[in-house]
Length: 390
Image (cartoon, rainbow, N blue to C red; front, side, top):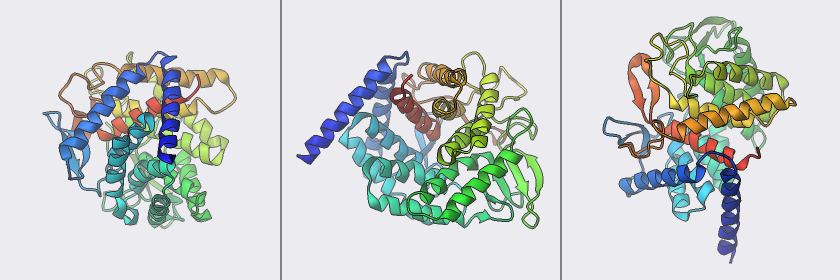
């Protein structure tokens, strides 16, 4: 009886969500039909194995990575999004399988991306199922991430064994959600304080006067002072890497959600204004806003997907209706573009949902491919779009 009641509630919820979406202009129902098809095909192809896709090869097929890779949580996250949208029990079962395959990651301390890995998988799983074992994994992952916090620097160290003594990348804002959430759900005050400090330091040091972002800030571990400001994945130290700018919008919007610190909201708005103001006519950014070959440079749909989701949340906050409508409209424009060709992978050989992303252009790695995190944030954005009143 309880199962029947649960499925009835899910059906009513999803029908309401789709009804809201259909009142708008984006083809959310058609996009989700395609997304479910792609996800189920991948699950079916891997059969009894559990593989974690990262990017597509020249044949359009997913190339997979070990669970220690920073992207491993995004495929189970896509499956949770798809279950949330549809109520399909087969997608729930797949989400559980791929999520629980990452259980050992709760103890990972070798890089900062345990937040991406665990919160996109176990985080969504706990939010939807309230499985207490999932909560335990999230809390342990937060404890693991805290081992990378240096109170002198006031930030979480991003990478080990790199050319910087203590690198902190703009992407790291995304991992703070693990600490903010954990601090409010059985974790410690120290987790909150560390996340808050990291956000403040990032706000102070990662932004230029025009609110474009540096990718990498290197700190002195003895004094805490900034040593260098530069990039790894962008075109140049002085340029603005598009996905990094998208991370900043998302990260500071999320930080405001947890802290209600107006400085973070204003930072998110300024970062969003820069991003929106530098978009080309079809609203999908080039991989770097200052890439020298524009308009003959690759687009980065992953940056567009991350930004669209962030802008939808950002449009909920603040007092100025003009600004809120600006961010909502920008999100709709971006989504409207990537919901169709050439960005939606429908009708192509790709096993993914979106095409035309860029992973690491300076290394000529993952250029003009499908990326699993582009799919993840795109699905999150379409859910937010459908659920959020206009």
